[in-house]
Amino acid sequence: MQRNRKSTKGAAILIDKDTFCEQIRLHEKAMYYLAFSLVQNEADAADVIGEAILRAYKNIDGLKSEKAFKAWLLKIIHNTAVEYIRKNAKTVSAQEIDIGVENDIETKLTLWQTVKSLNQPYRTVTILYYYEDLSISEISKITDTTTIAVKQQLSRARKQLRELLKEDFVK
Image 1 (cartoon, helix red, strand yellow):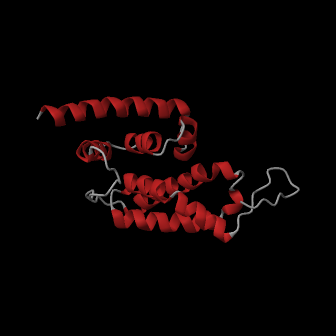
Image 2 (cartoon, one colour):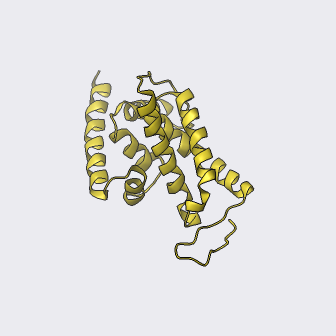
């Protein structure tokens, strides 16, 4: 990424169009998983992602560190999705998606379906933590909550997942 530091405090990084596009391609799965986990519909997730990419490009001067690009982008995705949900306020049934796994696909699909069935905010923090390997601190920034809240949400999500998976495998 190209750096052009301004002489003022809190200088922003300037990124050229090609580098921005490369970063978007690099994080497209993470963007999709997060958007889909919130809106629960492929078409709506695509709309959210498109709007978020446009917002990110327009506000690239808000990025302070190239290492923070993924967290910064996912925060924009999260905020755009929440805004989209509030604006549209509709319930849509979840559609099947390909999560791109080869080994023991049935178990992984069952787990993915179970994660998707979690209520918010448990679904979002679970996906960001386990599927996107983000730290609790990064998740708290993306979701605008405290690290303590994220830890509690992950704990409750794990408990719910254990119960839901117990039900699936006992049947």
